[in-house]
Image (cartoon, rainbow, N blue to C red):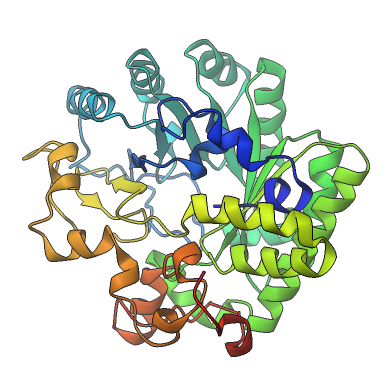
Length: 396
């Protein structure tokens, strides 16, 4: 994640991360990206079942229940292991996590074990009672996906009325006192809706939004041609920065992040270098702490059937199953060549990534996109929009 509000608007200083000691267990959630131990945030796709039909779903979710989902008891055993490992955050996702009736029980158990529990949801199933229940069990955050305003969102979600139902879910979370934010996956069909999404953020007093760059995985693999051009991506990131600055200058505090394209970090820095060189030096320090892409190191994934992946987009590569071995053992077993390589991707990337001056900050960007387009995990990420001139020079 690249914290646009943190980096560009100065809502976080390097000292903010340093004064917590940079250990995952001590850092507040908004500073976790700067942890030094990189204990993994774990995404648990607890079900493949979903009530929507999103055309870009990385999990290729289905309307029907899958028979091989981990049971409630198996899930609690997983949570025991994650807690003992020091995992700071467990993110319950899907499919649609609220399709599992035991989600509240599992989330409450995670909180009792000392982890922060959050959910990633389409929001359409969050009625007042559900929101009150999620608040009561100590859920830290609810991320609700909107991929545009009503016409575009409902087209992407494959169900009419999904937009209005998601807005009701947001309102119900707010009424219950749960921190709620938006998730928006950028592509050429919805990029024109981004200003309206910022307006919605302000109008509904939503404190946080994550803009996701498209990842070519699951059903999203069919959308490669629908990704933004490199120039279009630059324009989208500029818009995010401009609108975030506008909110900040109005005294409206919003946490704005971009996700899944770590070229955003150097891009923010280069813009800051032109606008405010002194502040740019502080931004560079924070980017060094961030370290860029952390698939297989600072983020991991457990699938509904117990398979362990480097992140939620690497479903085609499993490192083991929690039914046979604890996640903690799988995650730290470097006898698997790929797992070992992912712990230090910078040594294995090729082409312009290997020569890039920002490699230590970007971390080689997103390997899934490289593999999806070239067949080579270590090839350059095709979504990197930095020019050859911008990446040349002495390495940072």
